[in-house]
Amino acid sequence: MKAIGVFDSGLGGLTVVRELIRQLPYEDIVYFGDTARVPYGTKSRETIIRFSTEDILFLLKHDVKLICVACNTASSVALSAVKGHFKVPIVGVIAPGAKEAISATQNKRIGVLGTRSTVKSRAYDTQIKKLDPGAQVTAVACPLFVPFVEEDWLSGKVILEVARAYLKPLKDAKVDTVILGCTHYPLLKPVIKKVLGERVVLIDSARQVAGEVRKILAKGGQLNKKRASRRRFYVSDNPEGFSKLARRFLGKSAQNVMKVNNV
Amino acid sequence: MKAIGVFDSGLGGLTVVRELIRQLPYEDIVYFGDTARVPYGTKSRETIIRFSTEDILFLLKHDVKLICVACNTASSVALSAVKGHFKVPIVGVIAPGAKEAISATQNKRIGVLGTRSTVKSRAYDTQIKKLDPGAQVTAVACPLFVPFVEEDWLSGKVILEVARAYLKPLKDAKVDTVILGCTHYPLLKPVIKKVLGERVVLIDSARQVAGEVRKILAKGGQLNKKRASRRRFYVSDNPEGFSKLARRFLGKSAQNVMKVNNV
Image 1: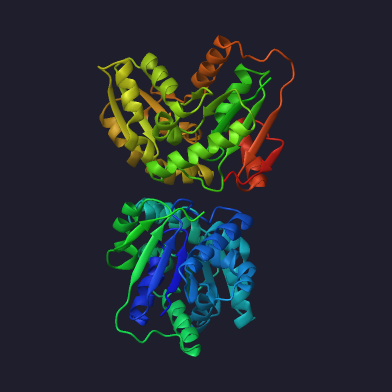
Image 2: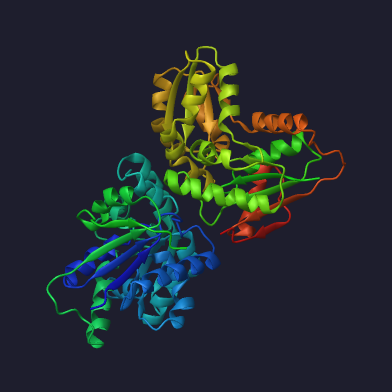
C-alpha cells in the first residue's frame, strides 16, 4: 500500500506527522524536510512555489498516495498555484486551521500569527471569510518567533517582550481565538497565553489536518488495512541535527533519517 | 579588464563591496547573494561547502579575476576546503579580521562573535593563534543577531537583553577587542558598545579585506587602469527586497539587481 507524503521547510512539520500517527497508526509515512533551504517564510512567492514543487516531485518519486503540505508558508503561498498540476490529492494546513478557528470563536474575532509570507498571502483571511463573512481577522507576522524556538529560548523576559510587541494588535482587537499559523509556534503557547490571557483559544491545525487526510483516504478506499507501518524521514541537510531536534516536535525520536539532495 | 567577484549568503556582503568601491573605485564588481538559500550559518559544513562551490562557479561564469568570500560562515567553513581547487585567487574575511584584531588588542584578550557554524569551525581561533600563540580567544555564537538585524530591531530593551546574554562570556573574559564575525553585526555596534563599554574595539573586516584584495591584484599587475567601472548584482531570490535593503549595507542603493537560479 502506498505511503502518505508530508513535506515542510524544516522539522516543524513533524507536529503534523505526530497527529497522523495518532489518528492513522497503520499508514506508512514519507517525510521530507528542506533543511538546506530553510526558512521559506522570508522568501518570495516565486521561490516558495519553486521549492514546494520540487518537494512535491521528490515525494512523488516515493509513489505516495496523498501529499500533506505541513508548512504554513508553502500552504499559504504555493498550494493554490500548484495543486491543479498534480493527480495526487494535496492537503494544506490553512483550510483545516480556518475551519477549527471558526468553530472555536465566540466573538468572531480571530487572530492569525504567521511568517511574513503567510501573512502577506492573506490565505487565512480569505479562507476564514469564505466560511463566515462576518468574522473579523487580525493577522500579524512574527518573524522572530521561529529563531527563538530554534534557539530553544522559550521563556523568560526577552521572549515575553518580543511576544508583547507582536501580539499587541491582537490584544487591541480583542480576539478570543488565535491561529498559530506556523508549525514552530505551538512551542510558544505558554508565553502567548501569558500575554493574551488564559482564556484565549490557540489553534494549531495538526489535528484537523490529520482528520482531513483520513477523510480523503477513506473516501477513496485508500486507507491502509495492514497492521504494520513504516516511517521514513528525508532531509536536505544535517540529518543528525534533525534526529536530535525531532523529539521536540514529534514527541519521540525520529529513526531512519536520510540526507538527500532533492534538487 | 576582468571584474572582482564577491559572494555572500545574502546581502551582508555588501559591506565588503562598499569598502572595495572606496579603495578600488575603478574596478568592476560582480556580486552574488544567495538569498534563496540564506542563511548559511545554521547549515552543516557539507552543505556550506556545496553552496559556496556553486557560488564560486557562478562567479567564474562571469570571468572574474579574483573572488572575495564576503561571508564569515563560508570563509570559516568552506574556504580551506575549496580554495585549492580553483586557479583564481580566493580571499576570505577570516585572516584579515584576525590580523586587525591582533594589531588592535592591548591585553591580548580577543572576543569573536559569529554564527553557530563560524564558531564551531574555530577558524578565527586558529588564525589568531597562528599570528600570536599567546592571545586568548573567547568565541560566542549569536544566532539571534541576524534575525534582529533583518527585522531592523536594532535598539531598545529587547535587543539589549539579547546582547547582554550573548556577550556575558566576553565581559567575563575582559576582552578589549571584539571581531564582529558576521557581516550583519556592524549594524549592532551601538548595542554591543552599550553592553561591553565604549572603550572596546570592534573589528569588522571589510576594510582589511579590501586592502588584501588590492595587494593581490597589484602584485599580479591586475589592477584596473580605466576610469569607469561597472557593478552588477545577482541574487537567487527577491531582487526588489535586495535593492531596498542594500542601502543599509552599501551606503547607497544597488542598481542592476538581477535574479538568477545559480543551481
